Length: 319
Image (cartoon, rainbow, N blue to C red; front, side):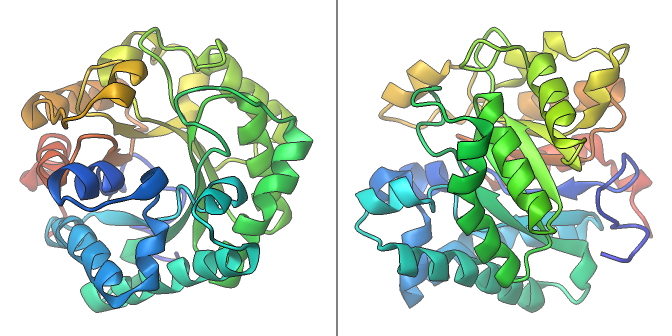
């Protein structure tokens, strides 16, 4: 992370792509059975690792070919104690798998890119509960204690950063940010919102970001929005509001459906990749600090390629 072009945290001049919807792609497009929507058990087998590599490879190649950075997620969104217990994964094995997920991602980076700082290894922390419902909420102190073991495993595996993804209430985000800071890892917080632009807890995105900053001493490197269609949050992001400058990344859904509708869906709604790309471009023209661009539920490599083409035209890429 020493290159000026691909320095962390990224600025508006240093674009980083991410992948799309890992779990939805595996389940709906590849026909993989993922109990509890958990991808991390795939690391247990050579077949599972190969499947993960096939999933990530086109995204990484797009970033390399188009001369932009890439943030490579570990497949660990469900790899916390409560979800692991539902999958009969004991705590000792869980810690080992989180650490191994970082090493696996690092190996993939080395195989697909000859510039290490172009691809950052991101330890993904998901919500303790359901990403779509703010039930069984923890205090910030409880969240820090709960998530610290996973963050520590990422540190032991030598992750470049940690991201808390699909956060739907502020206390859990605050706890994860504190855990990462205490362990010396850069941290990113990604909130998800409902169709009205508010978190599932009812708190506004502005309040959640400002409160997280205030209660962590601005520990997050930046904030993201994920698992919501741009139409759900476009209206609350104004270039005139100072808090929106803390939002540097988008990982939107392809579908404009609500979380409740997506939860009940039996088929994938891929939306329109070109429409999604145009919405990203419009947001980035208004919010020039947006520099981490990826997808979430229903998106695949087509969506990310379209987003890259819309937001980083060929004429603006480095020679």
